[in-house]
Length: 249
Image 1 (cartoon, rainbow, N blue to C red):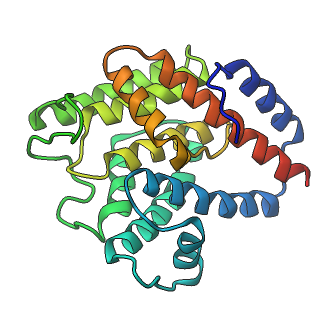
Image 2 (image 1 turned 90 degrees about the vertical axis):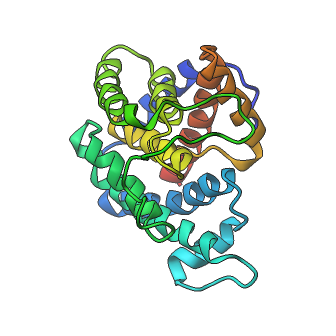
């Protein structure tokens, strides 16, 4: 991957048009691509949060049901749970909307093996983000903020470009921080759900971009939204290029 961090929104739309011209894809091809992107997305999203499983180890756990020596139980649970949430994400594509029930279920599927009591439940206490001076909203405000988020997201679909829409989808969840843990992975699942609903492809933020990703989240929290939108345009551009390459092959 060659990230120059220039705005690639226009290039993304050209690739999207190219992909649309190849559609409809056969059910076999769609199934193969879904399974291919499952591993990379699960690996990268978990790795951004400190999970030390490699992409190959993630594949072995998910596809073969085997355990990896020297890795923690939690790391295995995160791989399996994220894979389960990935399947549900695909189940929600045709609804063309995001609901509170979807958000809760995505979190529950990912998190219930780790902490069943808090899985799929909005937090009831104040949380703090290590290494950041940003303080999430009070727990008492979380549910109403999520309700507002769903309305704002539906409205934004009608007028925003894809980088703006996906950045908002991701960042508003990170800002609200609705769960005691697993907020980043829930945000990335939701951003991919919206991408798929809008006709784009599964898009990962590579672990090598972790520092850029965190820095641009901090800027977004200070109302400097463009740097994060540019990051999203770059990773989406790379995902579409890879998807098109595989379809053509």
